[in-house]
Structure formats: C-alpha cells, structure tokens
Length: 297
Image (cartoon, rainbow, N blue to C red; front, top):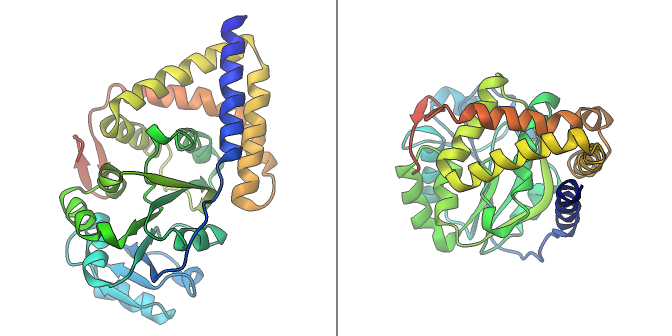
C-alpha cells in the first residue's frame, strides 16, 4: 500500500508543480520570429505572426511570398542549417524559432518577451493517439535538471547567437544542439497546438530513441517510471483519475477548453509510454529529416 501511495503522492506533487509553473516577467526587445519550412504547408495562418521563413528551394520561397511572408534561402542543409542561417543573417536581440506545423497563439507572444533567455513551450499534438504518447515529454519539463528546448517553439538570445549557430551546424537535431549549450531554460506554462506527424509508430520510436541518445539517464528513469506506474495503476486505479485531471488541465492550456476525448484516452498514456520506451531499448539510431542519428551531438 505504501508503494502505491508513494506513486500517487509523486503524481500529485508533479501536478501541483506543473500548476505552479508561471510565465516569468518578460521584456521588450527586438525579437524576430523565424520559421524553417521544407514546403508543402499552407503558410497563410502564419501571416502577421512570422517575420521570416527559411526555405531550401526558391519554389518554396515563392509560395511563402505569395501569402505575404518574407523569406530567404537556407545556406546549409536541414532544419538546423536553416536556424543557423537565420542566426547569421538576421540582426535581432531575441530569435524565436517555431515549426511550420504549429498554430500561432498567445504562447508566441510570451516567447517574444523572453529577452536574454533560452525559453521554450511544449506541444499539444492535434492527433489524439500521437498526443497520448507525446505528453509524457512535458512531465520532465517541470523539473529544472531535466528541462530541454522543444524544437517546435524555442528562443535563442542574441548574446549566444554565435555559439548557437556553430552548435546547429554541427548537429542535425536542432533541439539537441541548443539544449546542449543552454545554461538555463525557461519553460512557459503553455502548450502549442501542432499538426500530427504523418506516421504513428515511427513517431513514437523516434522520440523515445532521441531521448535515449540525448540523455540516457533520463531515458532510463522514464522507462522505469512509466513501467512501474502502469503496474501500480492496476492495483491502485486512483492513479488513472489523477492523470485524467492532469490531461484535462493541459488541454485547457492548449485549446482554451477541456478536450474530453483526450481525457477519455488518458488511461492509455502511461501504458503506451511504457511500451514505446521499452521497445526503444532495442534501437540505437533514429532518422531525423532524412539523416540517421546514432550519437549525441
């Protein structure tokens, strides 16, 4: 019984810690919002939010220009190269990087105010099964030692511009590269609505293997915790209720309303995360934007 109560206590403490994460007081500076894009996206929703689009091909730039977005070509390759290009091309005091599968909202205004800081927000995947796995990553954003920059929404201060550019040119995985040089990461109490990836299982395994390569100790803790939680919940069903409350509160952050369908799926979250992390134990590499990654940057 004490074991189950300990798990429940941790969940409640984590829930309270998540609720206590506040948006720090921001400031005003010359911030610029940059979005790398490989084409094939409807970019109209970013008009008025994004200052520059970095593209790999002139044809993609023409599409961005047609909807009224400024653009320039990637000098290097891949997403990391696009971000390095922006850092080397644009003069600003704060660089805000977002993905082209995100939906602009109030979270973007908060990121723009994070002058002088590395800051990030986390994703709310609009595909519910994708989200049932993906939300596990947000758990570890609460605690300072396990924070990381989520590549879909993050900031780089101008004071670290050169260092960030060099790190990105050496590493194909942008969030790994920037997390490695960030001394302190501000996590905003917001969730960014994102389009779901095209694949399901591949997305799950890629994220778990990336966690294993990026931080093996954290990956081991996650694997053990999700597995132990799943077993404990079978004997102490109140854990499912606590987790449902967390999912409901998170959906309000992301969407401004409770997503009851996602709440109904919340009992699957921890078991799914356990299965995926256990399966990733047998994988040494993952493919990111056409590049095979087998080691930490």
